Length: 246
Image (cartoon, rainbow, N blue to C red; front, side, top):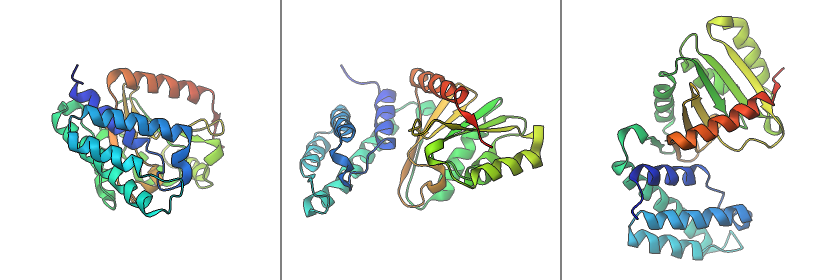
């Protein structure tokens, strides 16, 4: 049975957002092996036999030694094939489901894409990022409309020293005009980088906000309704179990 274009687009986007570091020994972990299996299966669903063969050949070229020439050559091939499949899927996806692919170095493109998402918020915006830093506020939270509550959920095991004072100064300056809350989830309990808008939309980012598109390309993918609700419920639960940032 053919896969719906929107689902294929979303699944490829999630794969890219969750891509392990294939250039290091991390690719040999069970989690990375599962990722490679899923990636192979979804590339097959993209219905391009050339890419299917090239992807599987690249995976078979990965080596236990990440410095081996065949391994070094295989990693960019895998990445290129995934992004090529994502591009084809985006052309077939409905306009409401399309996200943004941000090439390396195009930081303004990332800024513009996120600005468009945040401008539509009317109630709440939650930023989820294990490595959230002060620039999340200075570069992105400032784009949230006045009166909309902003929440920042970071990870206690990856907290940045500048985040707490940035939150404090924000509250001192804006108060109730631009409500802001920050919390630290239990150590290593966060994995996603998300923007949750009005508890109805969830967007996944391929990188943390503090390095968005600076050193590598990234993607910004809107979840389908069912997946969005699962992510929203899960992170709301984490939020309520997390400690306020002092």
